[in-house]
Image (tube, rainbow, N blue to C red; front, side, top):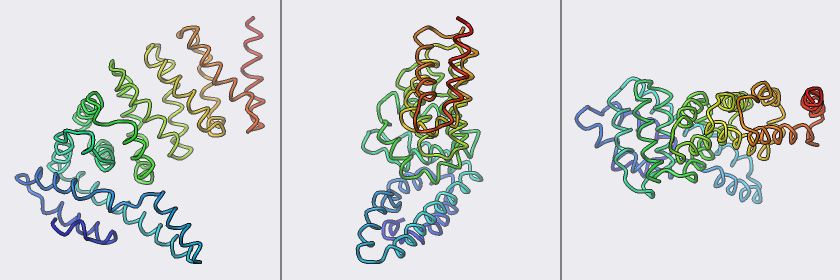
Length: 297
């Protein structure tokens, strides 16, 4: 543990595996608390840093070497989290100690990207701890310890690790949207937003499907939040939203359950997609959205 900060990235997975296999029930919390303090972003390569490094090396004619190093570093980081994931899957003591170590953190500045990644990993790996993690997250969000900037950094730095946990991330977002606390609802909406932004097309489809489910639920707070997220996604990535327009169009079958103001938001999303110049496929949405409205009139 004392040498952890000086260990090379490629050696880190083996060292972490040794440490976690040496943990006992008596010292688990102490070891994990120290581990989360020392295992910080100094061992994880930020995309922006890699990009800057690659640009610098390109000017010196060594872009290929930089690309290989980037790939190697990313592989080491993924392997590191695989090691941790394996340990918490088979050792309940480790997963509980990790959550407790994060729960005991009592200031905004002490909360790290690494903490959020670990909460997502444990949430997706150990079903018995889901309620515990949800409670910890709700308390952290309500207290202002975990904010949007930390969540955004978590996705932008570790999207390769998180993308394999898409269903768990969306399950957590769904649970948070059922809250009565606006700060918690907002955090859940951000989970949907960043999952759509950083994950692949399959997960994007799952995000839109989940948002449509919220909209059709009839719960006013859920409907408003989900519609606001859809509005953001249409602006954020219209071409990706175009691929999921059929799901959005399905909301038209549930207009009786939502208010006139919410209906305006639905048609704003559909109109933006229908008359987007980025994709020729928008014409079929024009026919499917406008003609039914004319017919009903």
